[in-house]
Structures are given as structure tokens and as C-alpha cells.
Length: 265
Image 1 (cartoon, one colour):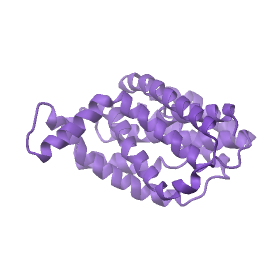
Image 2 (cartoon, one colour):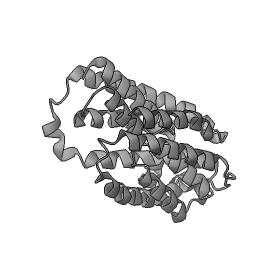
Image 3 (cartoon, helix red, strand yellow):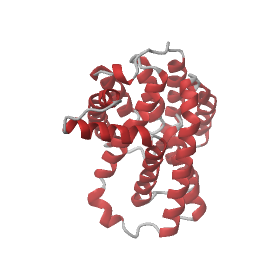
């Protein structure tokens, strides 16, 4: 893997992990275009760690607040703001469990040689974003979240494992459909990415020793740095668009990209 290839894959991982255009779909398509039969698993794991870091940095106050609130709840010393932070926990746990179950089932399907499938699902993502933009915004914030919200968003996020289906796009749209307000739907989607990425990484821990040396250190570092920086930028760009209900804008890119992919791949 060259440094340019590593940078390109890192750029699209960071951007597409959060912008509703599907990172898995784009990586599958770009691997085919660049003639990479297989991206080393260690490289893939490292890029996901980098994008996880992006979430923690951008949402550090919320992440830190939830951890602190849970810690105070354990020792029974509630503080200001704990009610809102704690109300996220149970729906998040439910959503993560459902995502894991559905994601594991879908992950058994090998899409590595099917870039046309990913291209077609980019168009499906566009339709999801357009449908989501037509939904009337809910009025439920974090304080009003229930298990029902976790079930709806968790199932949607599980479907987002399919290459070409945007995890963020489908989970934010599902959050809006469940009655969440735009800010809560967007933030909840990105917070759920933390356990989702950690769970995916945990499944690969046993293989890490075998992965060592599968890719040179410099491409690994370049890809990770680019993915982290692109992830931070993508999150800072996307949240204002979520609040304004502008996710359908990305359909203008996804539909042509999907059609081009269907014809040239």
C-alpha cells in the first residue's frame, strides 16, 4: 500500500464514517478502483480507532458527562445534569445490543467482491435521507428518551452495516422517525458509534498478533492521521446540517455516485 492510497482511504473513512454517504460502501468501491484486492485488517482497525477518536474529541463534554453521571449514580451521588445524561444510557444499551445482533448476522455475508451492490445501496441511502428530510421533527430530547427510541435506532444502525447504507444517515433518520428532535437524533447517532466501533474492534482483538506487520508503519500512520482529521471536520460540518434538516442535500451526491458505480464497476 502506497502513502497516497493510505491517505485516500483514510480521507474517505474519516469523511464517510460520519457524513451520510457510507464509509464501508466508499471503501469497497475505492479499493476496487485502486486495484487493492484486500486492505490489511490492521489498517482497517487503525482507521476505525482514528474515527473513534474523532467522536470522543468532538463530543467530549457529552461523553465525559455520561461517564461522570454513571459513576455518581453507582455511588448514589447524583449531580446537576445527571438526569439527562442517565436517560441516554438504557436506550443506548438497547440500541447497541440490537445493532450487534443484526450486524453480526449481516457481517457473515461477504460483499468484498460486490462493489455494484455497494453502489446500488448508495442510492438506497439517498432515498432514506430524502424520506427522513420529509419527516416532521419530533419534540423529544434526551430527557424524554425511552427504550422504544433505542429499539428503533438500534435496528436501523444494524442495517447500516450493509456497504452502501450510511450508518449515520439511517440511524439519524430512524431517530427522527421515532420522535426525537433533530439535535438529539444526531448526537445520539454519533454517541452510538462509540460502542459500535468498540464492539467491532473487540471481535478482532484475537487476530491482532497475526495482523502485526501486515502493513508498514508509515502508511498506517498517514491513514490514521488523515482519518482522524477528516472525521473531526465531518462531524463539525454535519451537526449544523442535522439541526437544519438538510441531510437530503447529500442525495445530490449519492444518486449520481451510485449510478456511476453501477455502470463502471
